[in-house]
Image 1 (cartoon, helix red, strand yellow):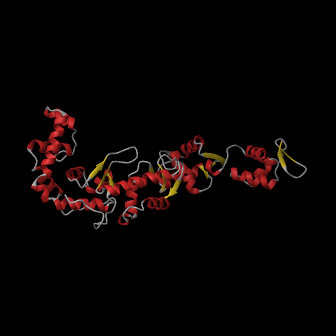
Image 2: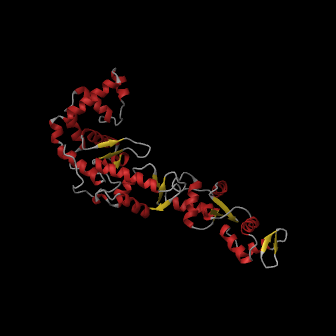
Image 3: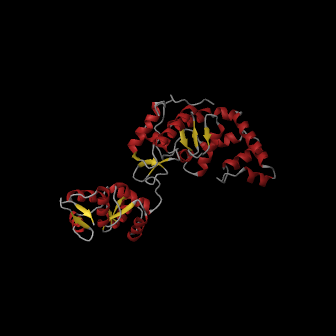
Length: 359
């Protein structure tokens, strides 16, 4: 079969839309299966779910039902595929296979398996037919799932290699906790893709390539980073609360956090439950009455008196204005609250030069 090249004109493939082809996939499957020996045809039909049932049967299950070994079933399957590839029907279907290859190429030449089949067929039976086509033609190559990448199909080995390398390099460039905007990540990804054909470089294809990686992901706020990062690995109310407070940019009351989770992420968050999660998670710190900030912002736990004492222990005696400045970095509190605590003689004293020190 003629192998597709990256210079071919690409269709405007839309992510999520089911593909439309000039050929009838059901009729083509029947013509191709007719070229296989009877026993092979039966095995292929069951292996690919091409009959009345869309179930993919294993070599073992077919062997058990037929009274033959798993290896013998594999041999019959391979013989059937070879017979079809050598047939007149397969040669006559060249235009259909080239059309299919051009479509995969239009998606970026390399596509996650689950994404690809969702776009090729609206139901399991139709997706099974296209899986059968991809297995037949040497223009299509499947790579198994690894620790780094999802299972994927491609029609250009050179491009696929460049994408794999670019994704690995992009992952390495991200620190463990780093979170970046979608625009920033796409810009960084493009920097890694300088050797890739420019015809592929559009936002839809770039995002499709990013979805190949199991180690790079995004959260509901379209922020990207390593999938192991707390801000990306969103699993429960705590994580949604973290995103809500971070997006707000300043301390929030726990009731407001719960409401924001509901509004932003369409996740029902009970106020009491949210409050309990904030209390238990070290990413949050209580900085006022019911007000929570992120620890990463520099806020510190404890009552105002404790924060003043820690400030003085760290910097020595300070003037009133300096103390207020330091405390307000660590706590979300009014100036007067700081002064009331500072003027408590049980804990602090005013020195002769007008500074304050801990008792």
